[in-house]
Image 1 (cartoon, rainbow, N blue to C red):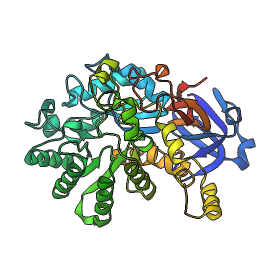
Image 2: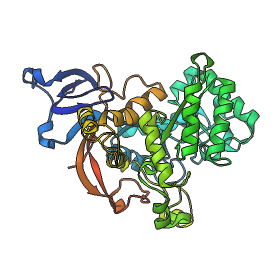
Image 3: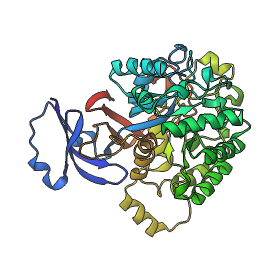
Image 4: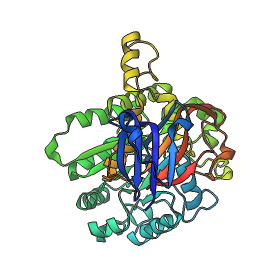
Length: 437
């Protein structure tokens, strides 16, 4: 049994922001000790990490959970490998990642998903949950292996989400059939809503989802219209419909706009699906994050080679910049700071940073993603949960230099920009899998 003590830290999750210590045993959080009883800790441990050595702006949080990433493995080693993606994930503070099915071959059976999860487990870096496609080979003609799976078989394969990725499913009848299977299996469908434009595709996915009573998760919401429609829909839902609606936004839609795409080349290196939007859309996404319309932040990590990007292939690399982008554009103040600043300045002026706390950011990047996936053993700091931990410096600034990324994909809209917020250490199940020293 390994015993780790993390002491003298600011500890933050969706519900807490306090000074204290953690004791980790058998890969779980064994005990939480507040600042008043820190001196009573039995310091016998295999590893002791003292927060005072990280500086006053350090915080210990639940490791992040990514609902949406593309690992390109198997099939596209020039873009990414399982190893490089996992290294990028832990460098970004992620211990749990959901990876999409647009691999080669497509992940459309439980056997393929299980093989990928087994390979990832051997690396001992992250918890990987492969997505199954809705249709065979993502061709939109017939259902994938989901139609023959039981809940037990799905769980054994480590599948917690279904998705057709950016292809969507064009045929309504087939899409509804997939939703009915998702409802039977008790698993959400991540809808990328690219077919016919985000706004119309979002409405379509939600309306069809209502008919089947399944769980629809809208990926990478990026427009004011889509956010407004989701907000209105959520407010109108009654508890007895059986329909569940959740959604996510990406860091690049939080921190970048169409101006960045034009600067990079909007048909080449600046191309992403959905596109970077106007600043008005970006502000609408921030508002939806503030009021709870948007449930989670997910990276949509989509690495490509330089040749792919030059040819116009859409996608950005995002795992290693996600926390810093969110920290820079949403703010990381304590709840007490937020209350004080509102009293001092009122509700007027540039309040983007001052009105968003680290607790809320933790909810969006950890606790809410865990709930969406049905993972009850992580996403918060509590005794008995997995010791998936990230240590961050909320005030450290650094310049984004993609050549230093662990990911093989180097295209980022934040290249050369100075961001605030840095991941210092990541623990997965009580094991140190990344440290920035």
